[in-house]
Image (cartoon, rainbow over all chains, first blue to last red; front, top):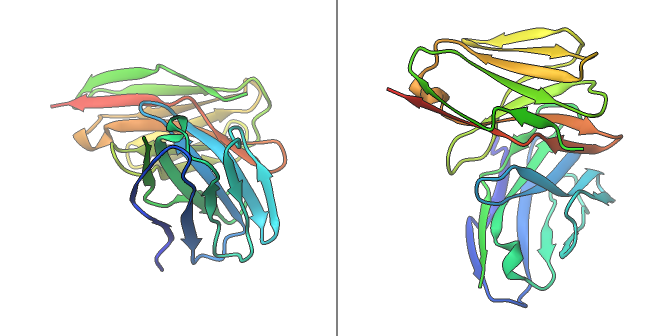
Length: 112
Length: 109
C-alpha cells in the first residue's frame, strides 16, 4: 500500500495563478481532509470530505475549492494564488472522523 | 475552539521526563496524539477513547480526563528521537477534526 500520496512536493506560483494539489489514498478511507501549516504554526483545516460527493468547509476555506468524485482522490484547487497562501499543505485520510489520521508527505507551496 | 496545549515549548536533556497538556473548552469524547519531526508529516502516536483512560507506547504514555476536558502526554526518560512538535487532536462537531496549538520539544544530548 502506498498510503496517502501528494503531488507535487514543491511548487512556486505567481500571484493570480491557479493550480491543483493532488491527493490520493489507497486504504479505502471515507474521511479525507486538507490542512495548511504555516511556519512554526499548527495545522489548520481547509476542507474535508466524509465520502465521495460530500465535502464541507473547515476553518480556513477561502481561496480554495475541493471536490471528491471518487473515494481515492481529493484534489485541492487554488483559484487565484495569493502570497498569504504560501504554506505547507498536508492531505490526510482516516477510516472515520475519530480514527487515526494518515498524512501525505506534504506540498510546499510558495506564492510570489 | 482549538484545544490549547501547554507548554508551548520545552527543552530537555536525554533521560529527563516531560508532560504535555491539552485542554479543550468543549467536551472531548476522544483525543489523539501526533508527533511531527521537522520537515515531515505528523505521525500518529495513540488514541484515547474513554474518560480516564491511559494508554502507553514504549516510554510515551497518555491520560484522558473527560470531566476536565483535558489530556496529558507523558514522555519518560526522553531520547533524542523524541524531538519534534507534539499535537493533540480531536473531533470538533459531527464531522470536523481539529488539532491543538502544538508543543515543540527539543531533547539535547
